[in-house]
Structures are given as structure tokens and as C-alpha cells.
Length: 308
Ligand SMILES: Cc1cc2nc3c(=O)[nH]c(=O)nc-3n(C[C@H](O)[C@H](O)[C@H](O)COP(=O)(O)OP(=O)(O)OC[C@H]3O[C@@H](n4cnc5c(N)ncnc54)[C@H](O)[C@@H]3O)c2cc1C
Image 1 (cartoon, rainbow, N blue to C red):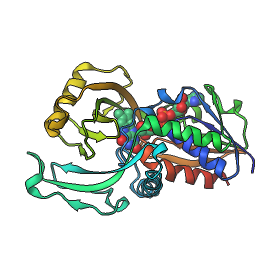
Image 2 (image 1 turned 90 degrees about the vertical axis):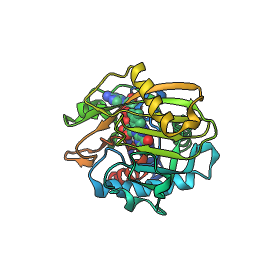
Image 3 (image 1 turned 135 degrees about the vertical axis):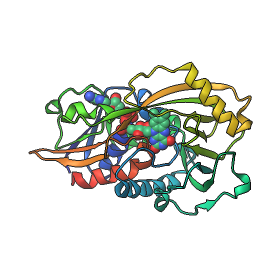
Image 4 (image 1 turned 30 degrees about the horizontal axis):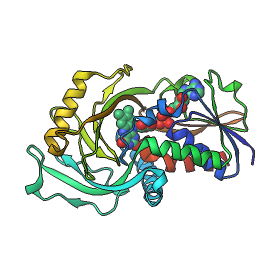
């Protein structure tokens, strides 16, 4: 096998690097930012294919990743847990994601919050990104991957028989693609009062809401502002998120705030996972929207197959 350079050190870049190294490539990751400053570090991160297309490959990559995350849940060092929760539906259900999960049940009508017409109950992986990204980086190191801080302005400056473009929202500048757009998301993390069940209430009339208990914290969100680049935390938005989350989960009423964050989900009409035409093998792997963690293992394995 030859050399491979991955541009991007978020969850997509690191997972691609690990799979390429496991396939026998000599891998270098070039990342403009430390991993804790990436969008990946902001992710909730619940396994759920949100804001990503097209459906068929998204389901395939998501299902493959779910299997791997379920295995990782057995390793306390990985920061992954299998958690059960409810997807609340305020209009007719559109469970396009259902083929990627198993064991879905209906929440009894008597247990539905006001304004909710139905809800799907399902067990999926939940990932504490602080623990997981550091675990992933350690796995990369063990597999021989070299991670270097470097901002790439032109792919021609990058060595490697294979180059993987996994630079999230900023991938477009490297390959002349102007179809990426940020979907801004704000979260606030509370001390976990002992919750394990999560909930997703995307169509809440007061604003999209999710509550994702990890281990020591509970991630409450959220927002989805298309085209917004501002990464400053908005205190009014935070107050509104907390009000919605506490209305649905009263156990959070007195939970202290641990931290807050804003991230820009890298959205694109379609996830881009393909080889560019040209003498050298350049593989694009970006545009994962609100589901980069959810699809990471499936996409990374496809990248490793495309790398040959
Ligand atoms: C509030 C919020 C909640 C979310 N919740 C979930 C969730 O519950 N589940 C889920 O699956 N997903 C979730 N997501 C989405 C998920 O975070 C993203 O899909 C994912 O992080 C994208 O990963 P990435 O590696 O492509 O990009 P990033 O994490 O942004 O990483 C990009 C990398 O590329 C590097 N880079 C960029 N440009 C260059 C350059 N020119 N040269 C060198 N390096 C460069 C950066 O330094 C960085 O290392 C959420 C996102 C947000 C904002």
C-alpha cells in the first residue's frame, strides 16, 4: 500500500485515517484546528441521520456505523453508550430513517406530551465527543497515523498517493465546490441529574428541541439556522433552549450549566463521497450535515475501499 493524506481532523477525517491505516496505507492527517475546536466536538452526539441526503446511502452508512458504535459501547474508554429514547412527532410521522434501526416501538398515546401525535421509541448509540474524539485520536496513533496541525490552501501542496478531502464546511474551497452551507447549531450542556433517556422534538412549535444524556452531562439543543456563520453563543437562544428542554424534561430544572457551544453543521444537497477525476486519487468525503458522527464509520470504510 502507498501513502495517504487526509485533510481534516474532525470525526470524518480521523475515522477515514483510521480505516485507511487499518487497510495498510501510511497515513498523515493535516488539520487546521485542534480536534477540540472542530464542529465534531460540538455534536450532541446521538446516532440519528439528521439533515443529510440522499436517503439510500445515508441509511447504509448510518446502519453500518450503528453496528460499530454498538460494539464500541462495550469499551468504557470509547465514550459510547446505547441509550433508549423517543422521537416525538407533531404531524404525520415520516420515519424515513427507520430502515437503519432495529427494535422500534410505539410510545403509548397516554405517555405523549401535549401537542405530540405519536412517538417512536428506539435504542441507538449516544457518543460523548470529548471522550470519543480523544479515543479516536489514540486509535489513530496506535495504528501509526501521524496527525499534524497545518492549514492547507491548495491540494497541490499535499503529498500522498491518495488524498482525502474531509475538511467539513471548508472542503469546498479545496475542490471548487460552492454547494456547502452552514447549518448553525447551538447547545447548552447541563450536569446530568441521572437521566439516561433521550428525546428529539424537531417540530416543537417553540423551536427544535433535543435532550441527549451522555455520561456526566446532558446536551440540550437546539437551533438550525441555514447560512448563519456566527459561532458566538447567543444568551437569548440559550434561555429559550433551556425553557423548551425543561418543559419536556422537568428533571433538568435545577441541573447546573456546565458549558455551551455553537457549531456549523456542514450541509450540502448531498453528502459528497466520490473520487475526483485526475491523475492522483483524490477522494471527497464531506457535507455530512447534522449526521457526521452517525455516518462516520460507514463513510470511512467506503473511503478506504475507494482508496484501493
Ligand atoms: C449543535 C450540533 C449538534 C450536532 N449533533 C449531532 C448528532 O447528534 N449526531 C451526529 O451524527 N452529528 C451531529 N452534528 C453534526 C456533526 O457535528 C458534523 O456532521 C460533523 O462534525 C462533521 O465532521 P467533519 O469531520 O466533516 O467536520 P469538522 O468536525 O468540522 O472537521 C473539519 C476538519 O477539517 C479541518 N480543516 C478545515 N479546513 C482545512 C484546511 N484548509 N486545511 C486543513 N484542515 C482543514 C478542520 O481543522 C477540522 O479538523 C451536530 C452538529 C452541531 C453543530
